[in-house]
Image (cartoon, rainbow, N blue to C red; front, top):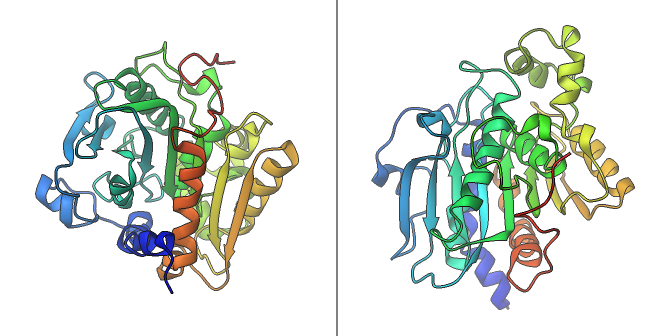
Length: 321
């Protein structure tokens, strides 16, 4: 017998399954709105209000733009989930967003681009993610967003960036100059799919290590301080938001120990963190789309982002360090 929640999760299959595409895809070219609605993401529910290529940094261009989707008939503030794509910080695009599957369950969804490493090195990537969060808070009323209930969800390099949003939400030196500075860039829930957490400790992980020189501006061994600055694990404190982390034991690009290290650090600090290790799973793939994992992701966001959930902090006024 399928329970109501199981049935609900089953209809979310396609969205979660597309995590594999979003993490590894080499698609980066411009796409039309209809393609974006049906080519790499679930079809939008009828009546969805969708805006594409909205700049979140004035004059920033496509690399600093987002797509935003508001459920049909939205009449009150709703929780927001922000999708951040993967691609080794070198490729990928906001069009590859499985998070639009959350629209039918009462979430506003945003999918963001950020400057890739052929355009700028770290911290440009997290500067952009933070600027996007601030912009979304600044436009909360326009898009029916509850600014106190914002979640971040990403895979691979996107998993790294959402984890960094979670642990470094109060780090002023990572804010950048993207505007809307009176708004905070912290989030209230993080779903991290197989993202690296400690970039200074990937020297033995050849595949992951190969992308880091472009991100850091040179060989990892010569940029260990930069690697630590770019690592979510560096900023873990007891006031971080809840985390849900999923990682496969056979991941050839990001070793599963990266997620174990992050989960251990969060748990030790007293943060609500759950690590789900998927036996035999690689860097994305169908193992992430089981009904149990679909239920887990939905339940996680529902628990922490629904309007009756207790806010983690005053997200519109939280001071930065």
